[in-house]
Image (cartoon, rainbow, N blue to C red):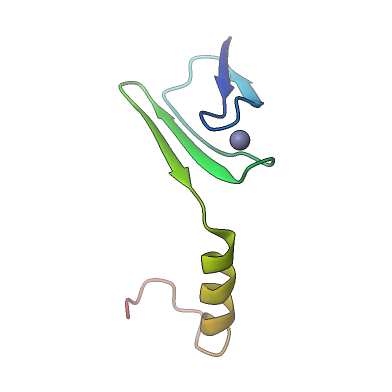
Length: 68
Ligand SMILES: [Zn+2]
């Protein structure tokens, strides 16, 4: 079993066996942690940005594939 901890606040997020790719959003600091075989990618999620984006898109169609 391999432990995955948040790279930002070190909170234990999961224990995974034979993981090749794990994507976990830390419930504490909202950092998105991406673990792959070769690298670890950490994304600090801006909650305010997501909220504004969601509110903006609420008036449009639910077409997530289209870009602005
Ligand atoms: Zn965290």
